[in-house]
Length: 174
Image (cartoon, rainbow, N blue to C red):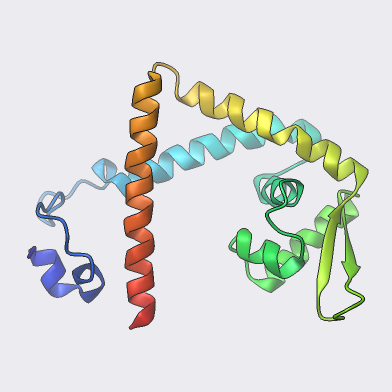
């Protein structure tokens, strides 16, 4: 077992790694996968936002629009979960989207506590362009990769995500 997992029960739950890829002595943050993934995410998000700016959409706004458009959520509560936002933040975000005429809230007739969401015609028009923009930006960032390299990269990222989700679930049980 690695020295890291001995001192951290969170990591101990997964101790499937036989190699300590990182060590405290000589640790270089800019060489960590967390740093690299975060930098890539920020740069891609900045480019997407730059492309959506003429349409008046920020990163915070296009994500819920796309989720509504693609049917990932239909209520304020579902959308908050999908966007990983608390209820207050989602309410403020929906206020902005409604003010722009992109969506509307409709109180459920069966359960007054439930607020259903629906894109307006303007919201659907704005959302339908988002997938093409995301494809264009991501393809530009993958320039030079072969299809096989792209598939391998995705499989590695999925493995990291699955491990992270398992670690999180294990920590939440404690």
